[in-house]
Image (cartoon, rainbow over all chains, first blue to last red; front, side, top):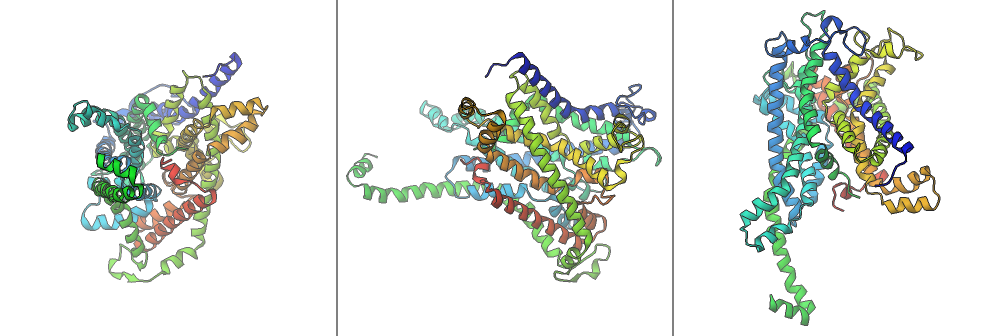
Length: 281
Length: 321
C-alpha cells in the first residue's frame, strides 16, 4: 500500500466519516424515533426529549400491539429461513455441477438464473394470487415459501457457482493420492473449502427473503402468514387518531437488528459474495 | 495408457480419432450427472417464474373480475388496447422512467465516488467502511422507506425545522402533498438504499484496474482527472455495465418505497404499483395480468437494449472469463 501524507490522511478520514454518516443516518433517526414516547413523537427534533421504551413495550409480548407484530416476526423468520434453506440446498448441487463438470447446461442455467433474477415480482404475483386462492395456498407459509424461491434461488445459484469456481478441486485428488478415501477427501478437504461460500450465499439469500414486500402484502391476508414488512404497512394506532409511528419505528428497529449483526460479523464475506459473481473482468 | 501414447506418437490423426469418442463418453457422463444435480434447481426456477408469466399471459386475454367470476369472457387483446390507449398508463410509465433514470444516474456517480474513497481508504478504515456500507444494502426496503417518510413528514419529521433556511422549505412544508416533492423523497430513499450495492460492484471493478497503468499514466504527466477518464473507467467498463444493467432493471420495478410513502397518491404511481392495484385491490385479474405482462415485456426490452447498446458481456458478468 502507498504512503499517505498527513494532509491526505486527514482527507481520507473525512471522506470515510462522510460515508459512515451517509450510511447510518437514517438508521440512527429511526432508532431515535423508536425511543420517543407517544407524546414526544411530534417534537420535530432528531432526538427524543426523554428516551422511553414505551413503543417497544407496545409491540413486544404483553403489549397492546403485540398481536400485530409478534406473529409477523415469527412468520418472517420461519418463511425466510425455510426459503433460504431450500434455495441453498438446491443451488449447492447446481453450483457444483456448473463449477466442476463439463456440462452442456451450464450456460443455460446461469443465463436463466440471471433472467429470473431480473424478473418483475409483480408479474409473478398476479397469477399466483388467483391460483393460490383456488388451491388453498393463499395466506399460508408454503404460499410464500414457493414464490420466495424465485428470489432466493437464482441468486444462490449465481453466487455459489462463483464461489465454487474458485475452489482448488485438485486438492480432492491429492488427498486421495495421499491415501484418503473419497468420502474422507470430500469431508476433510472439499467441505471446509466450500462451506464459507455456502454460508455466505445463505446470508445474502436470507437478506433477500427477509426484505420481500410484494409477495408479503399480495399473498397473505391475516397474521397466519403475513411477514413483518407487509405487517408494518398495516400497522394502526391504538385508536384511529393515534399515528402508529412509534410502533412502526420500534418494530423496524427490531427486524433490523439481525441484519446488522450478520453484517457486523460477516462483512468481508458478504462483500465477496455480492461482487464475486457479478464482476470478473 | 502406454498403447495410447505410442499410437499418438506414431499416428496423431488416428489418435485424435480414437480419443474423440472417449471425450464424448466423459462429456456424456458429466452431462448426465450435471443435469441430475442441477436439474431440480433449474426446474424449480422455471416453475416459479415461467409458469406464472404464461398464466398471466393467458389471463390477460380475458375480461375477468374476481368479484363476478361467472361473467368471464374471452376478449383477445382488448385489455391491452384499453391499457395502451389510457393516458393513465403512459403517465405511470413516465413516472417509472423518471425515477429510474434519475436514480440510476445519481447512483452511478455517487457510487463511483464512494468506491473511489473505499478503494484508497486507509487499510484500517476499510472494514469499518465496508460494514457501514452494507447497512443500507441489507436493511429492509420498507423500513428504509418509513425512516425517510417519518423524517420528511410534517408532524414527526426533523427535515422541515432543519432545512427551513432553504428557499421553499418552511415549518409546514408538506412533502407528500405534491408530485415533485413526493417524487424527490421517493428518489432520495431509493438512492440511499441502493447506492451501496453499486459502489460495491464498482469497488470490485476498481480492484481490477492494473496499478502499473495508473503509475505509467502518472509518469506521463496525466492529471488525476485524465487518469480517471482514460485509465480507470475504460478498464472497469464491465463492472460499470453490470451495475448499470442490474440497477436499471431494479429501479424500473420500484414498488416498496412508493407504496409506503404515497401509495401512488399525487400521481406517483409506478408500473408495479398499477399492476398491484388492478389485481390485488380491484380484483381485475384480466386487466391486472395485462399490466403485469406489459411490465415484463418492458423489463425484457430494457435489458435487451442495454445489452445491445452497451455491448454488455454477460459471460464476463457470469464470471466465466
